[in-house]
Image 1 (spheres, one colour):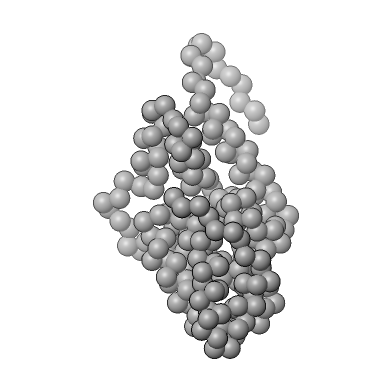
Image 2 (image 1 turned 120 degrees about the horizontal axis):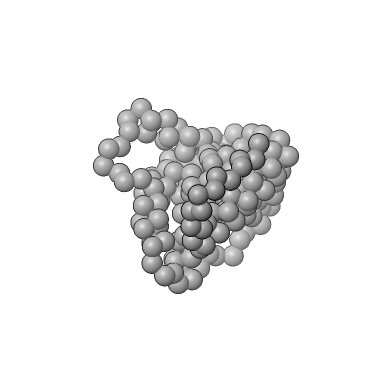
Length: 200
């Protein structure tokens, strides 16, 4: 995977979006280049790598149709990721209506990789698979804040929920990941015949 380009400031991205909405084609090119990595990365985690490219194209098609009405009340990056989220939700609804029967499920190769000793790159693949296995709300909040480096307020705007909810989801996602990584590395203890008392 190529190195991620330096992140462009939200102010610059928003300025390009406003100019593009007014008809500046050069600004539109800059806006797309500055945001396409984040959009694609977000959609990979929401919908899977196989569909991310198509969903990214749909995201930009929808965004370009409404770009002239964008007023800059939030950053253009936040606004665009909100569009991407709606595109992913619509794709899930379509998939539920027309379920695939030939897919073994997302993350199959990554799960199989856990059976072999891992390099640093394989550890990264494992972490991606574990993130993909998170509860939808927790994964969304974690990807936005921890992988895309958005602030909690921006993530709350994208997810349409309070900032405190985002903080809680991120904290629980971290706990889930730590627990999953621990379970992946440490073999389960042998059965002793003793049934542990379940915490209530």
